[in-house]
Length: 358
Ligand SMILES: [Zn+2]
Ligand SMILES: [Zn+2]
Image (cartoon, rainbow, N blue to C red; front, top):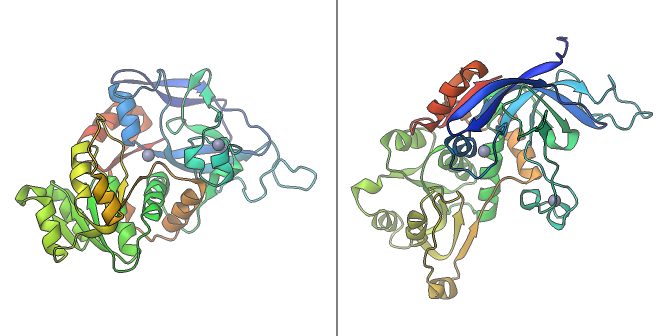
């Protein structure tokens, strides 16, 4: 077994489009915690917004929350025993794992009910030699066992890093209440739209994807979307109504960051349809809602934000069992030493996810 070094490297964002590698202490392990050597971390749009200065996150900051790794130490003891209850019994050194880096408190009303994604408590904030961060772009992380999820089978760790984004989409699909044979429209087919498309197909829906980019439409179709619509070839609303015999669809997921597109997507719903605002809006602005459409048609308008712990667990199972072809979404893999190039590549519109090898 490789020994654990005293120091590690981490990518620190410390200004607009400025990220540098710094040598920091390895996090200390508390009772009930695992030390994980991070192998891969994907660059999500949140990290990209911190990098470009569009996010309000204070700097310096160690970003990264879509990660995978290997357990290298189990809270001070080498193996579990009744005399040492602080040891997480279901983990051992060498286990391949994924983990939820974004903290929740565990004891607010939302956490108690299992809605850990809506936690309002004072979540523990991680910091590395005084630098705050979610920590996916550091080589090691210490986490309590309750937010670490074992992998099974031989799924690669770069694919396993998709657990977090997949968990976000699982949460969203659950909120839609999809039934067999439902017509579902997914507006926007970046990585999140693609993952929604895969999940909705597994849920027995007819999946209609709306996406202006040809390469994204082609990938969605290749991975199983039933119908793809190019909004450049005619009004999206007309195209969707034609495909559904003038009725509209049961569920719409909006993954585009544009409020005007989200407003127009609501017009795709049939009576009692469910509208999910999946993505956040940048920039945000108010949109009009027809209260009579909500009243007479009984449509449901809701959102989806992040994954709860259960969603995360389900995503780790789905990837372990290879139920989804996430390999197609890895645009490029960069070493940690190439972190600047990695961020620049992540910003390009043809990249679904850039992976960083730590
Ligand atoms: Zn993410
Ligand atoms: Zn909480």
